[in-house]
Length: 394
Image (cartoon, rainbow, N blue to C red; front, side, top):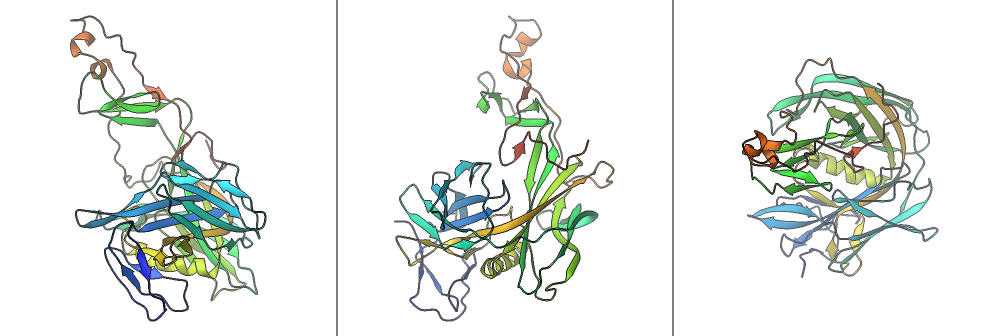
């Protein structure tokens, strides 16, 4: 039986329970004290549905205990669906790169109400509470500013260079507004695939049938291709002190200088509900203190998901449906003096010496007749695309 977090039958005082994770509990008038039967089998769901094509996604993971350390493994065999509450229309999500995504042309309408349902391979079923999509707020201007000490990375014990993205917007009056920003960046790729101690055949890295050498075979892109990256921290804002005002030069994203390739940053500005803002506000505090979104999950929140078969289980994470507005900016980076964060290895293409007996490559034996492959097509995945971003400049 999978482990679960059990609820008390009453809401009382704030309790913090740390088992390598901190669980901040939302939904009651007062937070609920969690009781752990054990540390494995905790379900964590991170889900977003938006009015912008390509921005909706769901991740589902489960905690496991490895060498007395708790970690979350992504689950790729679930059935995941969005449901429009008004029309009862269901949208099935497709697993891709360890996340679930809707069809490419999927967008949600402003004012519509949505739910998320997830069925795991073992039959457990999870359901969100309904979320209504509010009106988006337009971004009137976007700019990028270089900072050689953009963010401090504890794992490297140093500051990393990059650009911070800032925006101008006019906050709507007579309403409370809560903002959340995400971005996708696009950089030109030269190498579309690399195979460590293997070769690329039929689109997949395979073990080299001849030699188990210590090498990495690189495969050049056959057409223009862009690598996609995503935000590593959480940027939110409340108009508590700026209601109805013009907001200028508000920093909303950190784009680290991983390479010096020119880059397009596609920024999405989401209009959140108060409940979603409270969730992301606490999550931001946790992430900021634990090395960013790419670090092992240091903590999780109980949001608006529940187990339909066991109401006593706390389900970690949240489903958020939100309207978004999008602006893109092209940034030239060739002239930056600071070195990039990523150190690129020497390019090593497939060769006769990798595929065959070296004697065959120098004429001392029958020649090698294994075809040499040095390039591959650009894949359409969460992290790679052949579709040129709209703001790209030659």
